[in-house]
Image (cartoon, rainbow, N blue to C red; front, side, top):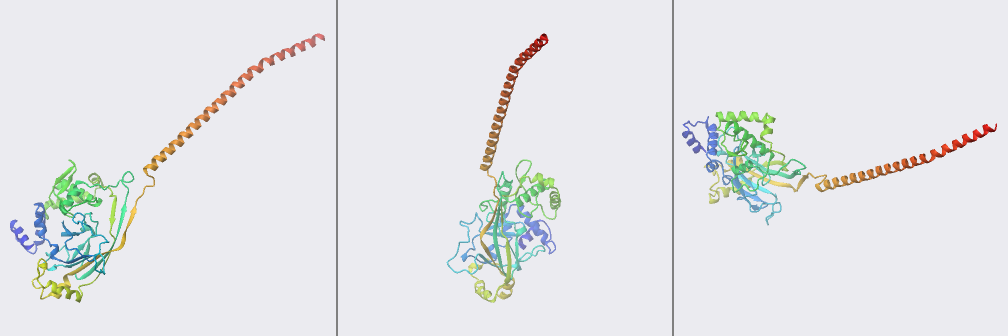
Length: 423
């Protein structure tokens, strides 16, 4: 790092001092990323074999089962059991023939803190994150900080919340092109494998797209990406990160504040960022003991001091042999990641009314309505018929009764006339 930083300062005609070393380092990283010099960017950070002493998964050696990714905050990151890299993913059922006291993944490190670049923003130690093997690692927001000189244990559980897709909810599992481009930037085109949709990352990417539309560059935090979504032309556009401590960075930070404080802008630029159909959680419990013990130091001493070819890449100071005990006490770190429950807790949304039930209900209600309608119509027709019949019968009866009544009255009148005559 020091040699690269010195060359960068000479290239930019800036005197390298302890005061400006950190700011020049961030400018160097941005410059390497913008020039697409990924290999040089990776070489500036620690490699896995610079610090990993051993790797064991249920007694199975696993030192070569990691894939490299690049973080804009932490530099080189190494993912175990990544879906595209592994020919066969490790499961809880994979066991060695030897007896294993602590099941799970056990990693032993020598953290070369004496070689760390002097920074006021970062601490000494490692950052560990548990995530699904197709999920983008968001180490900056969710990582666990591990301190050297301790043996850490991380107990975890796995749970999933699964929502129903359309038409029941608005959730999605489809992946946009900008998220695929982000995977390719952090890993590579070969190692990306299956891409998992993330609502949080979707919002981060659309924020970067808005920043680029205003400032023609993006912020390197929380993630590196080479492409952002072009809202006007509905495609991807190549981008660079803003150079630190310049007007570009000031513009980007100001625009980011405008974005997060404007719900209207967020709704316009992030309309495609809906709920994800599957959320995977890894609740963890972290504990630690002092390490290494005297026995552990004695175990590693002949291995690390033998200068064999297996350990030539390990980053050890020149006086490591003379001060072995001191260096091991301050830089030794072991972490065991073990599953406390061998099953996954599922929270699955279920439909109370399926499509078949919906059509059946509609058909049943329609049939009932039609049946009631026909029955009512028949009853009305029957009522009209009988009322008509009654009216006709009444009308006929009235016409038959009226003439006979008139004849009787005449007879009565005739009789009364006869009576009067006799008198």
